[in-house]
Structure formats: C-alpha cells, structure tokens
Length: 308
Image 1 (cartoon, rainbow, N blue to C red):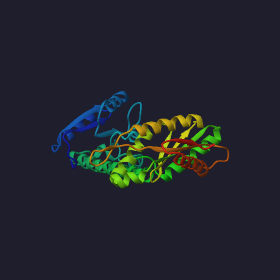
Image 2: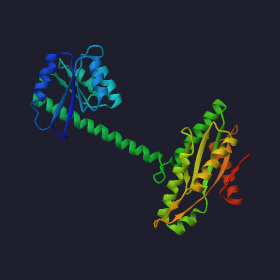
Image 3: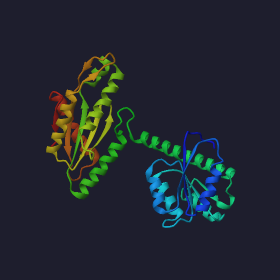
Image 4: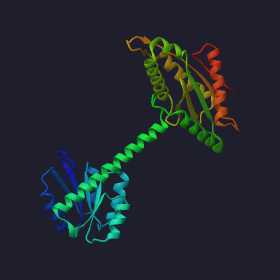
C-alpha cells in the first residue's frame, strides 16, 4: 500500500462470516504494513467499533441488517470518521456511481476481490481521502484569511461590520437591546516610536486577547483599523455596557506589556459606547460610539464615555 504508517486499522462490516473470512485472507497477504483487522456483522457491533477509537478505513457491505451500507456511508461521511469503500455482491455500475456520489472513497464488487485489487482500491481510496481532507483544510484556511485579522486573531473590519448589521437586524426584529463599544489604544504612536513596531504588534495582539477574555461568548470583537477595535454587545443595555467597558479598561490598565528587551510598560484604552435606537444603521451606531470615544480622549484618556 502506498501510504506508510506503523499501524493501519481496517473495519470490515459484513454480516456474512464467509465474506469477512475471504477479505481477511486477502489482507493477510499484504506485507508492507501492519494491519489490524476489526470485524463487525451487526448494527451494534459496527457502532461499537466506530465509537471505540481510531479507524483508518471502513470496508462496508452494501447489504447490512438493521441499517444499510448507504446509511452507514452517509453517517460516516458526515462525521468525517474515515474513508469508506463500499463492497457489493453485484457489479452494478449504478450502485458504484451512487456510492461515490454519496461520499464513498472507493467501490469494489466482491466478485472481483483479490489481494491486488483490494490493495489497489484501498490505495486509490486513501489517496482520494487525503485530497478531500487537504482540500477542506485549504478551504478553511482561505475562509479564515477572509474573516480573521491576521495580526490580532479577531474578526477583520469587513466581517465585524457585517456582524453588526446582523445584530441590528436581530435587535430590530425582536426589540432587544444592543450596545457597541469603540475602543482605541491611548498614545499608540508613542508605543511604536519608543519600543518599535514589533512590540506595537504584540500590544495589539494582547489587547485583542484581553478584550476577548472579558466579554461573553455571544459578544463579538473585531479590529476596526489601526489600533481601534469594535465590541458588539447583543441584548446589553447602555448601563450594563458601561460595566463591560470598565472591566475591559481596568484589565488592560493592569496588564504588563514587554518590549524586545523584556522591559515592562503599560498601556491604557479609551472607549466610546452607543446603543441601538430605532432607525439606526451600523454606520450611525459606530459614528456615535466613535464620537464618544474621542470625547474620552479629550477628557484625559483611559476612560469610558457614553453617547446618549
């Protein structure tokens, strides 16, 4: 077999002991890897085998009691448990096409089974499985790049604005409270000038982490641009939003930052709060919070101001 690993677990699902014995005999002739063969003939046996631990490949008979091979295929594919090769007593081309369309990694009529054919089908199935898994991993990376700010790990501007529009729609539909904070790091230019841009990047990353750690799972934080962050607080009124903002402010003020020489320093943030009013758009909500944030700057920084 083409893919090398120290131990390879194959689950053979077939209610016919003679067919399982035949598959076992062929697999015993494979010498280029150590194969652990698991056998199951009934529905509960298959489930136990799948629940018990890692399975690298499933050989599934099409006709199984209690739950068809196609039903097992759909479940295993949905859970991404392992690649599945469908075995069938006939060489029906329609069944082969259907099983592959449903996510099978391979198809093999029992009448054509031999050691060589079994190895070939398994290698093809594993290759297809690896390509699918790699494609999904690549897609996840692309989706992450499109939604996450690469420096801070929170949502980027485009996504945070979209989520704000979604939350405004929800607040309007269900007549719920919604508050928003615009947060800006005080004297951030001085941090870059005094400690360097690498340290400045680390400060941005740490601030994002501290904000995220001090909000609920239902809240959302994103980098609006530069040293500015947006925090969306669904179902939170302005009074409660002040409590959240003050907790964030105090946490950041107490945090210790380090430069490249391990010298410690601190930073503070100014925040402006606004709450949803009928007729608000995302831009109007942000604009009021932004005005309040600049008021916090004018009033001495390291403080929270509210737009009423």
